[in-house]
Length: 395
Image 1 (cartoon, rainbow, N blue to C red):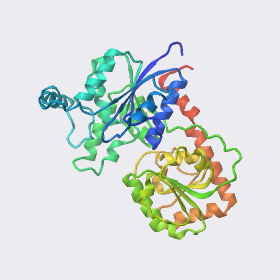
Image 2: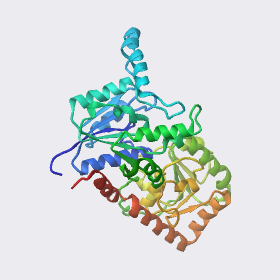
Image 3: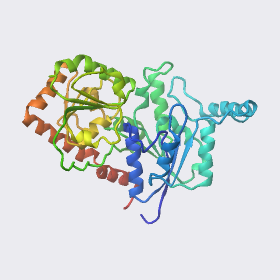
């Protein structure tokens, strides 16, 4: 690159925490920007929903991945009720009218306070790129003359109309139309899955680019004593994971030999049966690397949900076979011969696990397919090249 370019990147959570797929994606994007010599100003959020600590904020600032980092509250402080009323609450009502919220549409997290903070940065700095995460924040650029010549990008992360289809007061048709309208405000739209790329491009054409989840290929463990666990299950404690974990432990686990050793990592531990003799419970680990290396098969029970499952991509990175439900295939460009064995039936799910752990030829075949899936689509350098092409970046 002939001169150092500058990017304003909004991601509302801790981007170096890597506790879920969204954080892992943000972390890898920051690594991409650094590798291409870009200066990043990061905007994130703090408050009751985000729950980022002062220590985590400092960790982001000292990560070496950002030039500056700001963590905004969603609303200004309510120190003086009258000042709050006349300087924010009433003007915010007028601002919301201008945004013209769609009845039955998606939640809109843009308000006057966030827009003022955003505009302040645009007034003080000149950016080559502005990258916004999630359609919730898309309207930050709506009718905004301060954008200037900056190239605007929205990283969708998921199809939000699908995420909210069961919400009260959300109409699926209105929500999808609202989502497309928000994405249309941008010069470029990044889709994380082939399904979303196809859907969005039907309405927005070639401004939609496929930028899949990406990970660096793990370094093989040195001096390893071999797998300590037959199965590994990594999950947070969102509603869909809790429902899926309950299904697995009630319906599948009793069908498996008690000699199988299962390692469960993440907040999902608070929602599964305790005291099982063949289960290792780890609510939190600093680094998943050693645990993936020490496991034979990755399970990903997933009965509902949309988008790419980061745990499936992680399994591919380690060349581990995956046993999952059909939802585990969401976002994968290849639905067969990809390293996943799929079943919606508890007996079939258990049978896939048992066959992998008792048939060396099948295990080797599925391991090879898993590793090939990663290198073909999700390896960091492969995706970095996609972003280079999307942004017309020359290294």
